[in-house]
Length: 316
Ligand code: HEC
Ligand SMILES: [Cu+2]
Image 1 (tube, protein in one colour):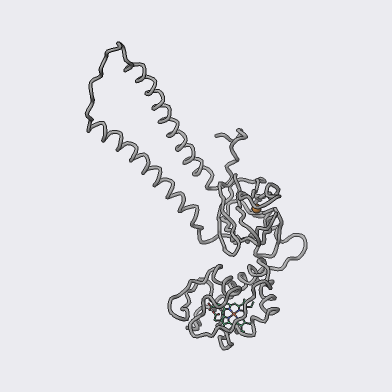
Image 2 (tube, rainbow, N blue to C red; image 1 turned 60 degrees about the horizontal axis):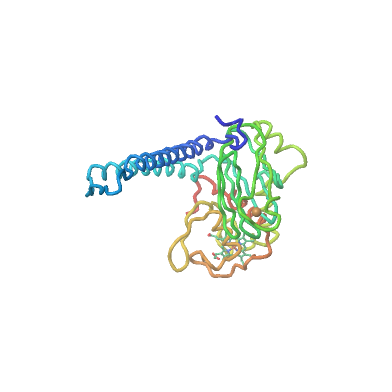
């Protein structure tokens, strides 16, 4: 439906049909009631018009049956729309477990994208068909918004914060990528393409061309370059805690409370280490604010994520 109609973007992700379903249902419902009310206004205006100059209408005190009738029906319809869209909203905001991770940095006025295997792109994103992809996104300067109409996904990209978005492409092709948040003079040129490829073609594309360094390897190099490894020893005997198996864990904080280690926590630990002190440690970690680029921070995060605790030999 509508695929040849240029007003509507293609349906190229697993969300597209579902989002359009809600969109059209809402529009149809609104059109139906708008038409019903308009037609009744006209009919009643004619039917109950004053027919003689001295006519005085009978007063109507109220009708409990009618009140219930026109309260209950809209209530059921509105709650139905609410439940339907809430269920879809949760689906769209909850990525499945087996996603491919990719990283996005917005900048006036371009999109910079990194694949964990090392490939980097500008204003272009290659993704495989039929595989859930999760983007972790941040901005180097101002607010942007990552928008792929054909996938029916859009999410703000905020400086100093990580937002994420996931989708599963269901159709081979190239689709528009827009910045959907006014971000300065050349906002309208902050556009790109998302290329959906057969999984095999995607693999070839990933490994083809120049040898690329995986993100976690680049992260490991930064880890040594910035001397992180002098304090964060694998065995936990350094001046800082061991980062092995840290990702996804919950750590106790100095002064009570705890924090879950996700991308945002690691970024904050690197840029503002004193904000959340790990219990039992002193605020000796220097800040790396202004020294490591957003891409660098993401590479460090990829490295920390790759430090998996050896199985069975649990340290705790
Ligand atoms: C001078 C020693 C030192 C250096 C250098 C250092 N750190 Fe730290 N780091 C610490 C200490 C001590 C803590 C625990 C206290 C805190 O949370 O600030 C810590 C905490 C952390 C945490 C949170 C750990 C947890 O268990 O929750 C992360 C992540 C981290 N550092 C990453 C890095 C990275 C990446 C670098 C290099 C860019 C680095 N650190 C450099 C000493 C250091
Ligand atoms: Cu922008």
